[in-house]
Length: 138
Image (tube, rainbow, N blue to C red):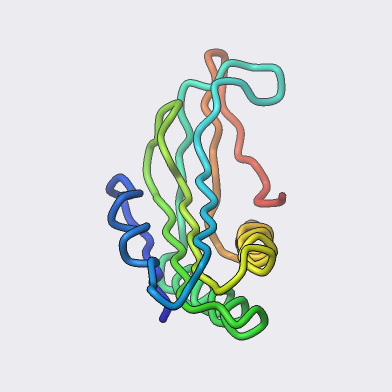
């Protein structure tokens, strides 16, 4: 099963973990991206995420499907926020369930790295003294 979401609203860690949990799996691995206070030596005020929504959902689904098949995952959840986020907010949440931990770690790493490279979601970092659009690369 795969659960993909692009949302303007805060991501719900608890319900995401509940969704990915499965009695036949011995592992849930989670990647939670958070807005950090400093980037490039500057204090971050906020991040702003924009997406080409239709294409972003398609690409996120492809990545999840590829990971699910490659690592024989039970469930894959990939959620990403759009809009303005403050320090400490969660822009991305990835969770996978599998029989064993090694494949779950590998799958989460693959999903976040591929998402940043291929999904049309753009990030603007807003600093105390200006702003910059940041390339979507790991």
